[in-house]
Length: 510
Figure (cartoon, rainbow, N blue to C red):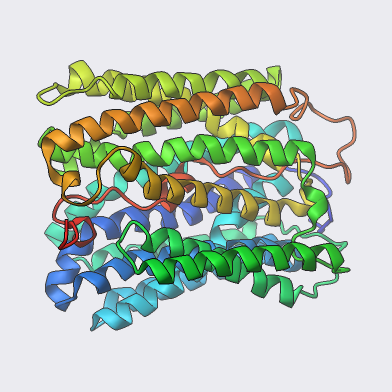
């Protein structure tokens, strides 16, 4: 199948054999990264004991991966547009698997951190590539259902991570949590041969080096500041990183405006692409707050074990798996505005129910109804917002547009993690007091509900209901850029640390 600036000459049908191979490759490749993120969180206490690691070193086992992933995600999308999305995706899968092997055999905490940094580089190639391949390869009418199916299936990897991680660590070793990526990575690289290649043929292959460096500095500095702020990092260093991020971002915009072949073509920021990103930022900030605090609340206030707290949100994943593809098809049929306006409001209703959960509440009587309402709303949001964002940037820019949306979602989640504990009064040792956690969680859920509702209002006011309408001739016509799916945002956000996690320990000064 020949390459084309707007994807394959004959776009794939979702139910065709080649379409199924494409879905298998993108789901397993992305799922590998999401699965690893949640498993490592569970494995951290054991890693600390066996490798005699300090608290700071263990923090960087998590943060190092997130830092390189977020810093290079725009570059990963741009490389796919220029040199082939399948090629870069496969390179990312190979790099991620090789880095996983290094993690598994690491004899010291220093080498483990270095391997995790390398894993983040592989993830930065995998994450935008998966959705970009879907956008560039499928028929327009099949893209929203395909993105919905991708969201639900990769969400499974995020949800089963704590359960699988707990089993592997107990039955084998923490090293098995990394070895599991090797067969998955090998399958993805071999099966990708059955997937069509696509790239932007209007690009000459040369990369905007200065733009890439400035984008890296902007994302790395902002990510570092957001990681270190809640961890009690030096205020001076955090402020310096924030200044560097702002200056690098400004210089990046100036560079991209003047460059003949920019890494990030600013003309993709149409009214619809900008609106989809704004809705993504607001809604995913609210989601990041829920997934950061819910697991901690269940453990600290209700006495759940880490595994039980992780399993409590499994109904969300099951709903995503069952309904995401249907949600995408519904948005394709009636337009995305109504689902994107109603979905966040239902999500907010679930958060308001969470704000009513008190100490001693039962799972079936209080937690489960809130989780179910939250999950139902989520199914109306994820696939439509992703498909709308992808469709508004254009097929030829699908790689870089996917990178933009993933970066937006990750930064929104990190911002929620930084600000919500402060707003809810959960700083220092209060995070670990059952009474303070209960009160703070209720405040945080009210804030998140307000954000989610604001996202629904924004969607109603700004989203074009014809964004996903089938076109008579899609050749070269602008389509969208992917807003990150549920599993992207959740996997990319910092985890809710169980009480025994080193990062969850309160600072010495309280």
